[in-house]
Length: 81
Image (cartoon, rainbow, N blue to C red):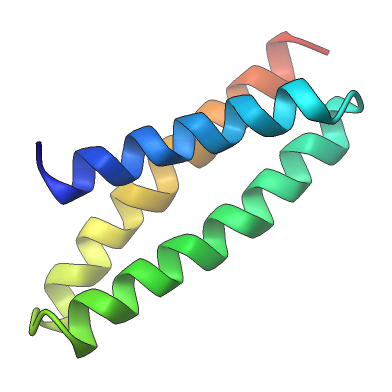
């Protein structure tokens, strides 16, 4: 399983965990977006500084790693209020 897939699954798991533990949907979504942004930035920095990938490559992957779970969180917020 690729690292990107693992990160996407981790984002989904964090979203589910926060939605189950925080009853206020808006607060759970905000908390998720903040935490997941920090995780995505950390993942980007590890890829650039330790794995040796270039900024451009990691930026594209970082957009996917952050964007897909963030979009799911916003869609879930919209439909499950």
